[in-house]
Length: 432
Ligand code: AMP
Ligand code: GLY
Image (tube, rainbow, N blue to C red; front, side, top):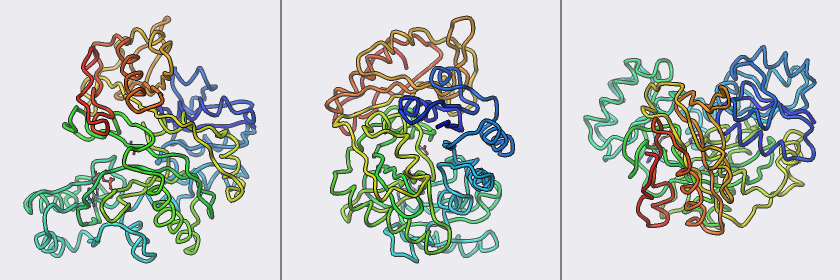
């Protein structure tokens, strides 16, 4: 089959790499991709949110399956448009993408169907006084969230009433645009965070893997929130028994709920979980793979990804199962200094070939450019370096050994990915 992957990050690189190895896949195209992805796929110069152009391209190139990486084209209805054109896709319809696009929608669905999540209330902008009174009456910390997509910035875990009130006012004063015109105020959940990824076909769900992300920019979970600075898989807090519970108590009931309400979910469901004493509870859903979680999840997958995605597109997951390598993976994100703020583009990365030559190491590119045989940084998050091993400690040692072969003074990375799970100190050496 001919596959089109939509997106340009290291997540999409991992998808292209995995699909390029599938015996079922003849060609992989990636729109728009990046210079690193060009080694595994044919690049298509169309932006990931240019829905009309993507549909026209998929049609004219006789694409058999479109795999959508980021959420924006999903929320814009790319999958609906492809379906109208008779083209199969991995990803939800715009209606089902509301699981990510509206936190109030997801919380209400959980409440209607008994899916375990934090207690909550929803407020509209015209209810500002009620929202402020409610927040002031809560035990601290309390969590205030903009309803819509706010590029990961719409959530405040408030330690004091003043902070919570400021978050309510910021959202209603337009800090997150339309996304903050409605807010969710919810109970703070204690526990450890972990993510679970399930491939869904509208009816059935199949586990693709679990991972733990590291969202803050700097070591020790300090600094601003980012898209993710590193991840390990499997997620340390998620035992096989907890994974089963999360599938049975959260993911499968959500699929049943979405189907019963007329908006069946197909695609990849990313469940952000809090693992507390009472077991797993849902923090949020995303309707896509995580980045950098995808880069650590896919290398553990033994079953052919092409076969699984085709099974999902055809509604055949009930008859399928996935197998995993009994290994750990750990990914370290290399970013240009200044990320997640504005960054300078064009600095040179040296030593990528040496890093890639390390044993059990993979490099996935997020924002690189090729110029005269040199690799140049072309954005915030630039690379994910993934190590794998028989243990988390081995995976981590391999990932950092490869990172240390990269000479890039303008870049930085966290040195403590996986450290908390290992009870270890940060791994100190050159980059960062
Ligand atoms: P979200 O965008 O909903 O995933 O929230 C971003 C981050 O805020 C999560 O990854 C958690 O670290 C934190 N968070 C969100 N909701 C809660 C909650 N109810 N209790 C504790 N932490 C939360
Ligand atoms: N790494 C977090 C995300 O992909 O949303």
